[in-house]
Image 1 (cartoon, rainbow, N blue to C red):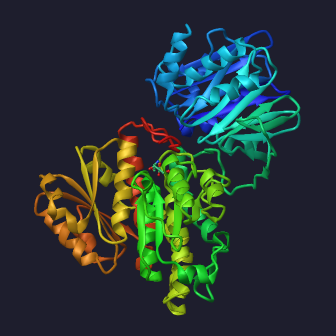
Image 2: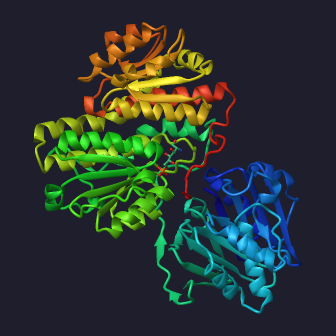
Image 3: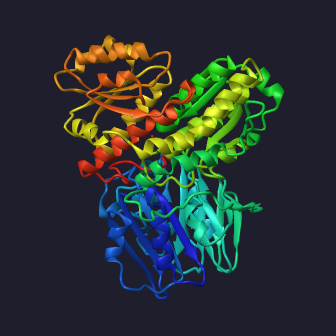
Length: 607
Ligand code: AGP
């Protein structure tokens, strides 16, 4: 949601902070700022806009080897200069950056006002720095000022705090991710591991309730009550994938075209072609657990939820046990019944989505068996679950998820195959599926060699007031994913419906020239999907048809885009590709900021 970066050590802090912000910017980019102790006072530079806008206002050089930085996704208070982090206490003794939501901040704000301290911003974050300053003025140590303040808070926080008169930083975590990077006589603080890898592989993932005092030589972790916490050092593996943009025009473009290689990373070493099954060692699934599983529940948000829906269908197709997909934000608030014999899969690219984390905590509290299907190694979902599968997409930095979607689908496909083979899926069927899955990366590359009339589709979409996406079976979640991509990138209102449902209402939306995207791979539902297509055409709709290469139905679309043939259970890995490209090209044509769409952030770490 927001990005936090801090540094204390022997190097100039400013370039390190700015580079850290650049690599965290996908977490939120409404405004950004830094605060640096330059040896005589604390310099603060901050602005509405992106890191590039911050760079434009920075002095040539700022001395100082200790500082904090922030890139904001607004939750409380508009996108204004006054609400930009870092926030300073009135006396300038403390500067603070915050990621999270303080639910009782209005009450705390009134308390400050009663003590003669009036906040200058609209944010909940500023309340914290003013409270800490009052504690400091009252004789508390920096650590005590933080601990005493945290006792009064309700909500979530990731904090990095700079004290003007004390050569240290203090961090605290509760509900928002925060990681310490341990260097040689220098220490880094970051919202996620991504920017730390440029400096160190040794990191400590903070847990809820941790408070960290960081000096120049070392750091000490304590609980909010002051009890010492033994740091658990994690050595970051060299994750596959290049984080830098390289010569790609946008991260989204780069990540769309990385999908074949990302898919190879995801399935490599995880399928047993001989036995026709999956081998997801990280799930720790023994035969008994799989055979006795009563129900498989999948949780996710946005694109992850759509991948989960595909997984759900494949689990039922191959495992022949009930599977259900839940939207995390709904699941956690509906007082769910948790069955200890069921398996709960949390699907999340970032592993930091607050709604999914909250749902997971509820499940664990009630004895459910939880597994993560996650991209970011060491993320909160991964650590809460303790087992699961890393989808190995490599860093996904465009806010719009693409390669993580196809890898989530692939990982869930492998899981469904493994589950199926402990039950009723034959070795021949398992082998056939695995063989096709191993061909999928090549088939993606084949499609990318000839992407079809994407630009003709874009011409139709650009002019649209709204777009209807239709699909059946496995293509229904694909239609939802295509609609989400076009909405979040091009800001065009979209509706995704199971094709059979279209005639029960949404058909009223159609008028002459309405664009309708129909996903119709060559599966057992194709003919029925074509009925919906004809019903739309009969009302003057313009059809953008995603179909299997060589299928005669291609003649039915006003714009027909062919994808290579694949096993009917694996079609989402291919039919989603033109939808991603259509959204990308439409956004470009409309002049949108493809990698940083308005109002969005890559990881929604607040509820
Ligand atoms: C996808 O393009 C969106 N950026 C968004 O829906 C995203 O999928 C959702 O917020 C879930 O994120 P996660 O996978 O990191 O949990």
